[in-house]
Image 1 (tube, rainbow, N blue to C red):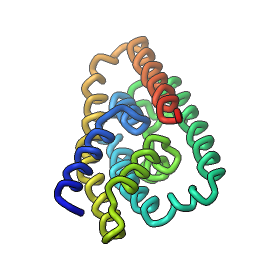
Image 2 (tube, one colour):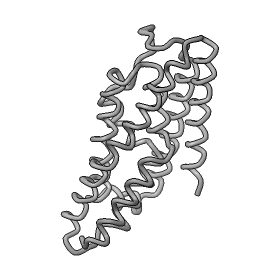
Image 3 (cartoon, rainbow, N blue to C red):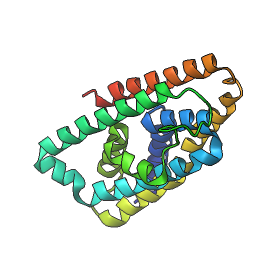
Length: 198
């Protein structure tokens, strides 16, 4: 990978990691509802799970979807259904940091697995592999792309969780928290609509 291509990959990783999407919206909601420490496993799952997805896509899953397009459609439908379920859970959350049944932050492994049903993550991974992994030294280039995303993605998604923690102090009343959670649920649904276009 040439230095120019590496710089372009870093910029792509930064632009796609910092912009709103399902991961960032859920991390912000989790930071606001549970605090940074309880959101950390979710955060770590995103930071590790997405580079693993880049490697998986780069080493063959993209070709599998080319050969069997119906698998991609099935994955998109499953991802959309899961995102709607997560939006519903966020909308129903009614107390900060409550340990009530069904109200807990996403775990590390749930966040790793979520990358595979996240439409924005698929678009990012496919874009990274197709645009920034030249055929010469392909496997090494895929691994470099995964490493770049791991390094760039961590600070970006951490900022979203930290922003959620920052707004937490303004959510001291049940009404304010309900408005915030409904807004986050709405943004999650909106991010789904945007990423499923096309």
